[in-house]
Length: 65
Image (cartoon, rainbow, N blue to C red; front, side, top):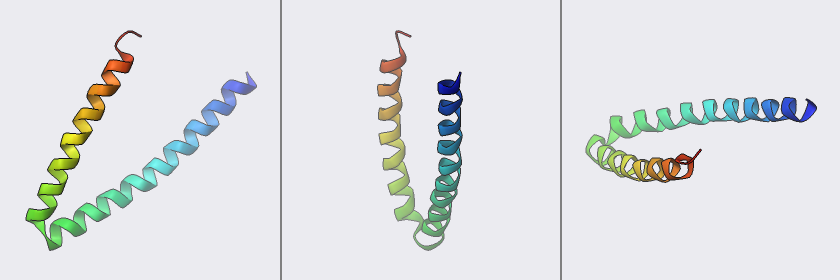
């Protein structure tokens, strides 16, 4: 049981770090769209395109589970 508890502790730590990092990403996005909306939209579109590729790869990994 201790190993399972340790896993959950690490997962909780990861979650907290991701929360903070997601806020930072949103702050950058706000700044970008405030100062250069056209350029920011282009970069965001590229990020979205690459994220879709990552999601498809993740689907391949989890397909046979």
